[in-house]
Structure formats: C-alpha cells, structure tokens
Image (tube, rainbow, N blue to C red):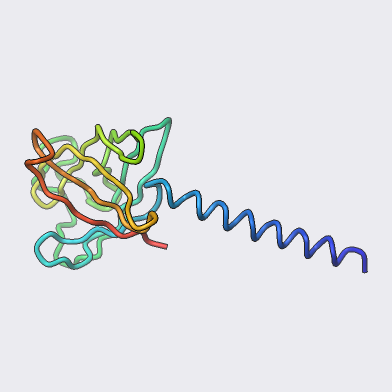
Length: 148
C-alpha cells in the first residue's frame, strides 16, 4: 500500500520532466521538419536537423513528393549520383542569438548550393529558411513545419 503514493509521485515527476524537455526542444531547430515545394507548396520532404558541437546539419529522411528525383543527378560535388534520401543537404549552421547562420543548403532539384540562414517562428512550430547567393537580399525564403 505504501508503494502506491511513491509510484504516483514518480509518474507525476516523469510527466513534468517530459513536458519540460518538449518545451525546451521548441527553442532549437533540432528535430524533423517538413519542407514544401516552392512552386506548388505541396509537401516535398522530411529533413532531420541535428546538432554536434554547436554546428547544425540536416539530412533528408523521407521524400513526400512522388515526382522528386530519387538521385541527385544535377549535383556538382561528391553527392552527384547519390540517393537523395539520407543525403546531407544542410550544413555548417551556427546559432547566433535567436537565428542560425553561416551554413549552406543544397537544392537537390537543381544541384545548386546556397548560403543559408534560419529562424524559428510561431513558438518553434515553424522555421523560416532563407537561401541565397551572395547577400540575403538576393534569395528566397521557405517556411518549414515541425513534424511531431
């Protein structure tokens, strides 16, 4: 009978800890994100962003667009001819305040590599990605949605 109150307290503490971890993860870009096609706005892929030693990178884990190329034929680097699923397309991002910058992103559709900046919005449920050549003014912004 004495074990029941301890068990209830343990379960309550686990619930609180779980909620705290979930809340903390929303202030970081780490996680799974749904990207969208620029032209159709249809879901394109799931990108998993991870962090190692303060550097953020992203890998395509799933293609959602049935018309997307399965292999990066237009890539001009070591990724040419490689499967898009499992490919690192985002690299070198560092957190600076509430933004992430200094990285680059590959567009597997055209093989182009762009400079990249990211910023969370809507309490961490969305991510604005600015991809550009040269200066941010000469680029485009996509909004990715956090997968839960």
